[in-house]
Image 1 (cartoon, rainbow, N blue to C red):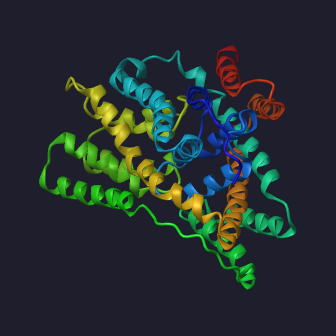
Image 2: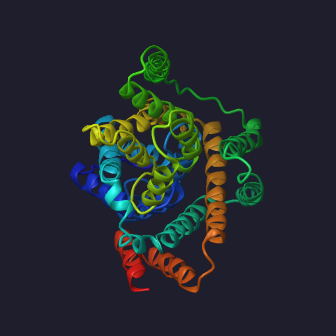
Amino acid sequence: MSERIKVKWSQFLWDVFICSLGSYGGPEAHYGVFSSILVEKRNYLKEEELTEMIGLYALVPGPSSSQTVTAIGYYVGGPILAILTFLVWASPAIVAMGLIGVSFNQIDSNESWKPITNYLPAVAVAFIIYAALTLSKKVLKKRSDWILYTVMLGLGLWLVGLSMWFVPIMLVIGGLIFTILHLKENIESQIVFKPRWIVLGVVIGLALLNEGLRTWISAPWVTLYTSFYRYGYSVIGGGQIVIPLMIQDLVQSQSLISLHDFLSGYAIDQAIPGPLFSFAAFVSARSFTGTGFSFLAGMIGGLSIFLPGILLIFFIFPLWEHARRLVLMRYFLNGVTVTAASLILMTAITQSVELPVDLVMYSVVLVSTLLLISKRIPAPLIVAGAALLGFVI
């Protein structure tokens, strides 16, 4: 583990806020921002440690990039800073999407904002490419790393499109492969640690309580909270994975929001920086339109969906700190990080292919990637430049 340095909390939280403003797209794009600002610019942690966290929280239910940045806050300053980190990271997007949900009728009829989003997907792809290049360079050190990386990249391109459940499965397999290769070392360890079972008990207890509340109480506020808490512990892989679950539950089963409003809000969410789980604030606010409590509903839904995943950090992070000192666990985490890096490259490839075939679009990807590599222009300015380009062209 890298040597801890004393960090000024206000500076760290400001850097997290900058990350939030520059994070478009899904978790893979967010990792590029974390690497650029929190690792390379500020040196809060090493690239290998960031990659371990990425792989670890990709296995855990909840919003993986939000869990990763919250865990970085835990690493830098402990549990209190972790909570502040989450709030600084997620609040701007939650508040923005809640306000959009409240005023959606006016926004939906206004075409003037739409050019802003034209080239933001290209910038998001650039961040994913940057993350893939940076993380791969750090974790690929030996021949066995390259072999596992190549195999997992091929499997990812083949299987992940069929089901996102292949992501955690492949991460575990990658870790087990490296562990098995080193079993003969038979290294004993005296490290003993006690998991914080009370935290895991709280997460499971709240889940059971919520299921009971859904059965016993049919009040809209109870349904709102329990629904989004359920999404928070039911999903592995980030914001894109929760969308089909929301459609089935909120649109089709409960009829709290129309499919048109749901999909329109999801499109707007792509133009809002920060975690994609903030979309829950829009859906919640829109579901309670006309009640006088629309914005409050947005805040409840937005925070509820994050709650189980963030609570799990306080169970998992201490385990990671202790377990990574074990020799075999380091091999397991090494296999996980190599696989995670290959899956990020896979995402860069698939998302690049899905972009519209347009010379300007691919030029934005290339220029944004080169600017990120050069480290001469801050990430938020690159995003702002792409947004302005949408109005110019």
